[in-house]
Amino acid sequence: MAPTRHEFHEFLAAHFPETLPAAGCTAQADLSGSEPLFVEDRCIRAWARAQGQPVPEALPEVMAALLDLDVWPERFRQNCGAYTARQMQCLLRTRVAIAGAGGLGGHVTALLARLGVCHFTLCDRDVFSESNLNRQAFCTQKVLGCPKVEVAAGFVADIADYARVRPLALTLNDDTMPDFLAGADLVFDCLDNLATKMQLEKACQAAGLPFVHGGVSLQEGLALASPAHGPAGLSLLYGESAPEQPARQPVSVLAVTGTACMMVSLGLRVLFGQMDNRKDARTKNPNGGQQGGALTPLYHLDCGQLELETFELGS
View 1: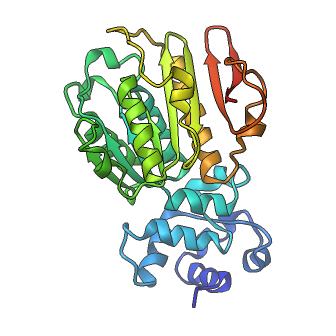
View 2 (view 1 turned 180 degrees about the vertical axis):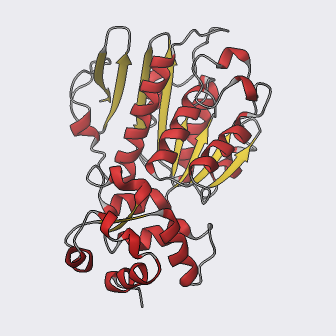
């Protein structure tokens, strides 16, 4: 039988009595569950051990179970009200696969880790170089020459030691994509190569996985989400074959961070069941299509002009 809020309150009173006044609730409210109860990490770890759970490995599930009682980890205090307890449980249990750990991928990883996601597969064969210092979240002078996925894994561990990161320092292709996608609930495309992006989206469609795409250039960025069993958004955007790309693509950190925020927001909408492509894609249709059939919303951010536009792709 699952523990009750009363049992958890008694545990705190016995082992951490000093934490109860700091919870921001009266004792009666603590027991009744009329208000959220916020508890520190050390209390949750002690509770997990008392339940016979391994620490830190079991902490995501322990925290998810406490959220059923409206008991929130202190680390997520500021999430309370912005997200529901059920949404936080979803984040704690979701497994994300992120292709690319550089500009977009680094910021997407950092945002998800802050939000509460703690199961990651990161894929990038590259190492950090000086040209990454202007925009990549995990790049510092100290890690130049280090594998991006290893540095990213260390960053996530510094936020949450209970998080599990599977770093893959390899090139994505037909042979490696099945392993990269294994166990994922949601996939983020933070790659540079458009042909590989389209290849990854097709692999996600075949595997029945939702796919979030992002792309940046200069001070602008694009983001879209392709549902698990919907049309391929990239083929609607770029056509069936990938156009040629310049050898060097200038880009501002403003476009990178803003686009990463759009991508994560789209990912949350997918996870929380809030995606309504027809409702979201109602502003402009660059292809001149009529409203009939599924539409894919495309979000365009121009940091230079401080503009955010929504387009609709499809017919």
